[in-house]
Image 1 (spheres, rainbow, N blue to C red):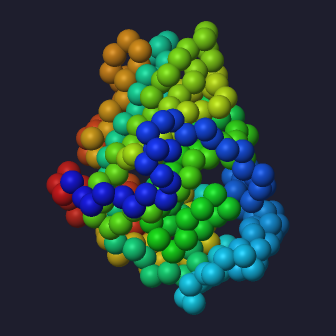
Image 2 (image 1 turned 120 degrees about the vertical axis):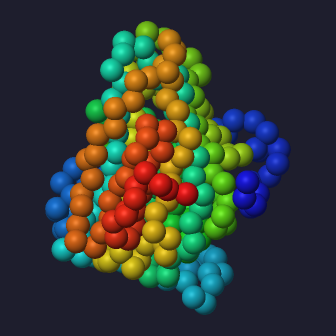
Length: 283
């Protein structure tokens, strides 16, 4: 087990489910439908730059504060760069989706923004437990943080606070069904001691995903120095029992070496650098 995470909320707040808050700057963090539309991406980031300027006026930011990049490298993939998914093949809804991983060493700060997460989704909704490097209006910075988000039609509908974590910390993430009304399902998201109940029900989410999502990354050197992050102890259950898992790889490979390796149904390695020599022998 790693070190305990630093709390950014009081103990009393963590003793009860968090009431999610609506993000007013939803246009900033939207997932672009056309990820090749560079102009749209830059336009979406304009409010984020305003957010940074506002923060500088009201907060004492560190001297080494790095503003986010606003342009994408044309020769490097972005969005869901590594994306491994399994669709629920049964008629029963997903009851729980759990996984663990270790926080890697920090990358060299360069204004980059990327996430590692497990998520459950349908065509309009995505609920996710995520680890983040970089700052957004939802929180974060040039540190590792964890949090939970419910995205609707590409826009954050509600989000939890962010908690700072440290390299070597053990992350335990879970998506758990709270109640069901027909096909309308309400879930609780929990990542370590932080938990959030979704404010809005989701209609029959079937897609379970393990993802490395990144923006403004120009080379693999801007990822952590670790070769990979191992998403381990993956378990997915429906209300009727274990879900049959058949992973499909939808990753955007590139010459810099980002790849996935999933030798078993219960572990997936998200590789930042190079190719695995022996993907069946991961630590």
